[in-house]
Length: 116
Length: 115
Image 1 (cartoon, helix red, strand yellow):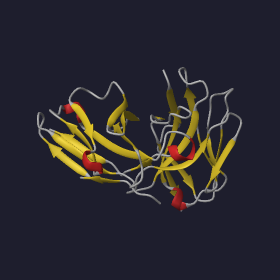
Image 2 (spheres, chains in turn green, orange; image 1 turned 90 degrees about the vertical axis):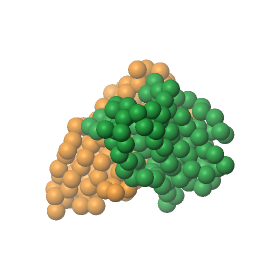
Image 3 (cartoon, chains in turn blue, orange; image 1 turned 60 degrees about the horizontal axis):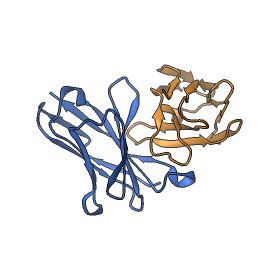
Image 4 (cartoon, helix red, strand yellow; image 1 turned 120 degrees about the vertical axis):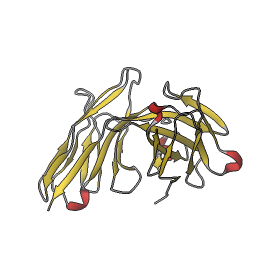
């Protein structure tokens, strides 16, 4: 089936540094998402993105977070600066639409971010 | 708020035995949520297992079934006879109809099948 890729699979950085997580969504999808899962906890919605704009974001999507998809390439999540509590697995997803069959979200395998 | 609670794992079941993973939801801001089961096999991304959008209906896929019960606010996942290949982490989730841009997940249940 359609695949979403995430690069890198694991990233270790020092607190205060900037990090960019990359997502290669399904090629004809129009909606893009990030979810965050802290070890042992639920996967939680961060943000969704359509047509170059953030549609909805949760309270977890702090001011230090930003998303973009320049030139229709990777969908990225940037954290600047990082904090210890940003350590988690970040999952990217994409879908063709928001309703019916087109709303099915396809997920990547996740990027494990460790902030030291 | 809106939330999902499911069977705490890990769960171990012997091959060919039956399985039930419980899922209950609270949807205070969503009148008629859509309900989902997702599965993550080792090394892979989360993938949709089944989805039900109407209360009272049953969804099924790969031998798994789940019935959307509005009275008990439940969406339990069942399988009559599990196989070793069913070892995975299973997630129950709810979403807003026609605006499924934000899924609310349960904590996941890790299932291991004993051969």
